Image 1 (cartoon, one colour):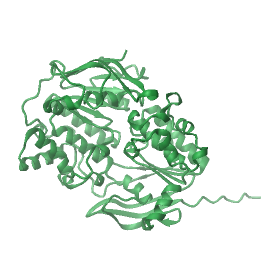
Image 2 (image 1 turned 180 degrees about the vertical axis):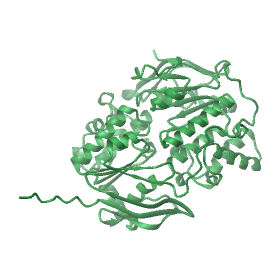
Image 3 (image 1 turned 90 degrees about the vertical axis):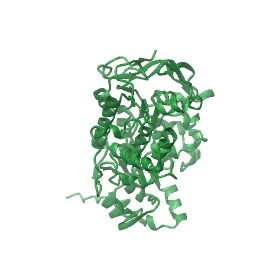
Image 4 (image 1 turned 120 degrees about the vertical axis):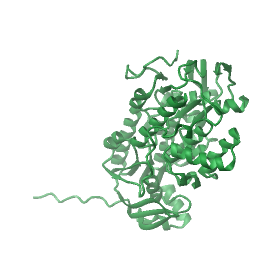
Length: 494
């Protein structure tokens, strides 16, 4: 007697021939996707292909000004893009969960982790916050539930946002670059977690990713998207170094003394019961024309270190010197010229770019502030800076919400370069970029540091990227698995 065939479950959500436009610009073209309960679906493609736009369509939150010009979206039996506001809120509150690419910007900084998680829980009385935090691979012995988001690393904030989404017990879980800013071990853990909850709870999961290893490990199937009009690739090195060279004069020659030195630096995060030392007795010299990699597990203090160098996090101990002159620990106590010479490209550009300003206005501000350039020259420099990071000049008219995550990251880099710094601090600048764009961006940084003596600090979880590009590596938070990682001693953590 033959066993009757088991029919596949009906899709929980489906996009059919979906095309989304922003004015005359296509954000997404003719996309088809079906999300099946109990399965994990990956959405891949280069930066600007429409991956985030597709996820936002599935949750009924297209970018401001965007419109559907073809196809449609059905979510849990309803046309989500046509739902009245109250029904849409109810659907999101009880049946959908979305974790964006910059999850830290969506977490209330005044609320502690425990309240952030229970706020969205389906059953607050039966929700164990410590258990949920352990589920997303956050350490149970550090009392993270009592901290505010300012006391968490970018990777920890990402996992708190995931715990908050899981507390809702959704039928559909949508994740935009869930492993950005996570080390390899945590990426493997998150892959196992997503597979487990999809199979155990019958959740339909979709995520975007630039990481082919994560996709292969985690997804049941993958949809590859491509831009309708592929933007030009970033150059492997500045085609015209003068386009990114300081308006203010020559740079120090490579091979001289350090441009920035740190001695016996110590710093903590949190306060009271949640106070935790993340940096202890760090020594570091940044030399013109070199790239220093900073590596280590999530939460070990990598971002705290670069924020301290930028004057945005006050250290407990230690001294900083810039060009052999004492450098104040606080950004506010530094001179304008000192502020200009040290620039930070943050991990989450969406929270760092003013949403009310166009890209052109964002890049013009440092040009006027530091160099008092006339309007005509500012317009030229904006086009040059955008070209240097592989974006067309027409992007100057766009706002941050009109850009993909990778495009926002490149705008953030262009803004830092506009100040013509001596030291460029890059916090996970390649985590939201596809492999080719990330490689091209690193080629650009190589050209800048060798062409104009820029000292670059690169925070990254991508060990092959760091070891292949860095002149020296500073490991934080314990020994590294690869003994060949340190080419030259960059500093010490004692």
